[in-house]
Length: 505
Image (cartoon, rainbow, N blue to C red; front, side):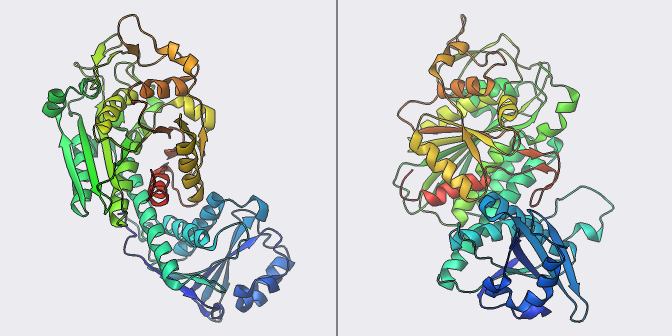
């Protein structure tokens, strides 16, 4: 996955051997105080202390200063962590990404990272976040430019994390590094797919990407194309895709670990490869980013692939409904009545609310595997983006336990979710005089109404959570570890959830 999978990541438990390393990244909190309390920095104290004394570096969050030592031809990169009491997993990951990104910009081939002692973090999680941030920070976004510049490439080949005083065996640290590295590569792969131009990733192209990924791992893959979708009665997916000259499809991924006899975990990802809005056409300025409307499907594909790569014990099923929502002459229309795979009928109100139309069939399909839990992830509603912004995603579920597990797993790898309600009173918004329900209501409570629509298609006996990542799937400005464009958000959450719940769903 990604172009950094071959990067060499090392771990050492010892003192840094002075500033003669080609490049070293050091993290400092705001107003770091006496450096004598940081034994891992003993070799650098004579360089760092004067900088702190003159306040040329204050340790503020994401403050970064590269200091060169001409005598021994090396670099020292200082990265500010901000106030210790405000440091979160997400902030630490960003700081790690910034430090390694700076090293990559200096064109070095190797960088050493001093693992800082942080009181409010478990030692293993510090290392995991530094590795995650490091790989994401070293990555450079691929482009289609013909005038390729050497500056677009990364010469960085090795990242060595050095720590002193660790009581954990080196083997445990290496295990942590492996998991974090696979997780970073998975996110980069999800980001790559979500950043591909829509003319290079139609539904069947995405299906081929899934086949390639599954072929490199212990994953069974099957693809329902147009005829199979009609045969099975997945008319809701077909309705969304019928306005495009590129037919829809559903990809089913199945990974069976050593606990394959247990009920599977089902992951469902929305895969609209381009969303024009259909006949309810979007404004022109809203369309360019719609190539990433398959970010949920990309996250699920990357997460299932990572689970196989990590040899996780669970039985995991991934369902990826894929369609292109276009206003062709056969496009579905407002007012249409569509029969879904569940047998329920739906009145179409707005063709730009297509994500829930393909997800309802995918959720029905996922239940055929009798899963122990279902998690769907989708760039579903602009309403969720308006409510929560671009740094926080929404989670909907009736299960307090499932909500806590997902939110905790997300937080531990620097992703954040906020629980939104599934008010039963709002179900009346979806009533239809012509069908079993209509698929959307007015603007008020749009994210809740969309989640309630999906809930109609999940039987109560299946624990289910819906993740709305509409606001977090793309960035309009680059940030440490995340360039402008697709973010791959949610991939880390899904993988960490699978890691954290190997014995329970």
